[in-house]
Every structure is written in structure tokens, then in C-alpha cells.
Length: 416
Image (cartoon, rainbow, N blue to C red):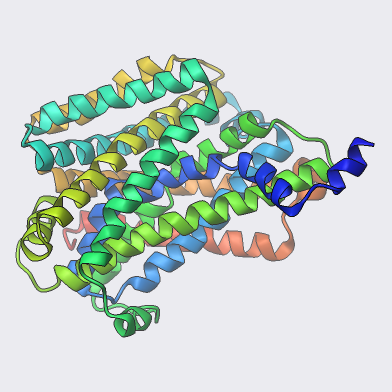
């Protein structure tokens, strides 16, 4: 009888029940609009105009595939990606794997805390070190929500911050609409010298973030459980496609808005190679309201992304080493390096760029196992990747890894 009634539900009721299941992908999407993205996208638009629009679109499509595979692994196996790596590896490999993942987690937190500190400096004139402390403290409060109230309230808070980020950066398109013809022209893949290659690699490196590849598998599992093979699992996988698709569409739109704003407003101007310089130029050209919204969007980005990063770090450690450390303790541990960098007076935009280089080292360690595991029929059963999906996933992993090797080389060689 209940099955019959389920089929008799109206389309609105079915849609509403599906919407309730959305959420994990929107938390993961925070990593795609973090301060590292702000720095790389604004630099790309300011230096090369509309040239690299195609990179934003390509990076977003690739990220969507990666995040869906991560969520699928968690739903089908009932395990997070770090837990599957632990099961398939010996102790020395697990420890080495954890060491690189922990380094990536620290680099991630560095970028997010520095971004939040820059935003507080722009909004209130606070010293960067004080802004870093406030960013870390607020993110700890957000993590306590997850600890005390569970995953869904945490998701709602993060989605709310994602909405603020979207408003903050999309508003610039209202103040200064970009050229439609040049935007379309930017969809044609091309470069203009090694500098544009470096920025393209940085944009992709700032988009596909290792920590949310690990995190999404665990969040999908924790939110939806481990459904048995059949209609229930297929429905959750279908909803997950919508979840990932909508989240990546929003994140991609925000990233594109950053680049288009810089292309239409900042191109050819001096001193816009830093976030502070770009903010000052936006205020000058578009007015104080546009500058305020940009700074508020950056602040929301820093607060949300550092919370998600700390959450991911805890999941990675628990999955790889089977060791649980309270989120508050992890928050303090990964916050310290960021505060040290700010206290030493390191150029904050440069610190953001270096953090993206460190993140680049961790990308293959997340992507290669993910593609291999989701292509393993023994592990995934009836939900193993289709051959076409596997081929595309390996291509994505190869392209992202190669571009990040280019990013590392050009940065170390001093060409960026």
C-alpha cells in the first residue's frame, strides 16, 4: 500500500522530498569559491581580460564529475575515500598518505584564514593577525554547530554563507555588465604566453581541491547512509547528480563572475595583482557599494571554507588512521601556521599563491584512488563506473595533474 501511495505522489511532492536530500555537494562547493579562487580568477581577468573564460567552464565541469564520483563512492560502499584507502593499503603507505593529506589540510587552512583576514582588513581596517584570529574563532563556532546539532544544521549555515558569497561577487555584474561577445569569445580554448598558462593552472588548482574530494564521500555517506542495491540507492544517486549539478552550477557562476568583473573593470589597471589592489580599484570604478559587497563575499568565503577545511581534515585523519581528534582541537592545530604567516608579515596574496602550489601536490593522491576505486567492479558492484565515465575521469585526473605540475614548475622557476 505504501509503495502504491509513493507512486501516487504529485510531482511537487516528489520534488520536495528530493530537495530535502540536497546539501552535501553545496558544502563541498565552498571549496570552489574560496579565497584562492578569488585571487586566481581576479588575476586572470585583470591581466588577460576574457581570454580564460573557457578555463572556468572546463574546471567547473571537471569538478562536477570528480565530486559526483566521490559522493557515489560513499553511498555505494558506505565508506569515505580515506577509509577505502586505509583498507587497501599497508601501514607505511597509510602513514605517508596521511602526512601528505595533513600538509594539504594545513595549506588549505592557510589560504582560507588569510582570505578572511584580508576581508576583515578591507571592511574594518583590522590588522591581519587579528583578522586571522577572528576568522579562526568564528570558524570554530561553525564547527561546534556541526558537533552539537549534527550535519544538516551545519549544511544550512554553510549554504547560507554560500548565498552571501554569490551575492557578493555576482553583484559586480550588475554594476558593470561584461561584454557578451567577448565572454562568448573567451569560450574558445587558447593561451597567450606562459603567464596565461600559469594562471590557468592556478585557476584549476584552486578549483579541484583535494580535501573536499575526500570530504564529499564521507558527507554523502553520513547524510544518506548505505542504501542497499535497488530503487533506493538509484534514487539517491539520481538526487546526488542534481545536488552536484546545482552546486557546481552556482560555484561556476560565481567563479565566472569574478573573472568577468575583473575583465570588464580592472583590465589594464596598475596595482590590481593583489586582492587589496583589486578591491581598491573596484571601489574607485564601481563605487563603495560594489567594494563593500566584494569584501563581504570574500569574508563569507574565508569563514565558510576554513570551517569546511577543518571538517575535512578531521574526516581524513579518522579515515586513514582510525584516530578521532575533536574538531576544536584540529581547528587550533591547523590555525597556528596561518597565524604565524600573518604575524611574520608575509604578503597575503603571495601566501595565497604559495598555498595553491602546496595544494597541487595533493591532487593526484585524491583523484587517482577515487577513479580507481569507482572503476572497481568488485568494490562498486552494479554501480561501477561506465567505461565512458572511467575514460573521462582518467582524462580529468591526467589533465588536472599535468596542469598542476606546470603550476609548480613555473612558480618554482620564478615565472609566475
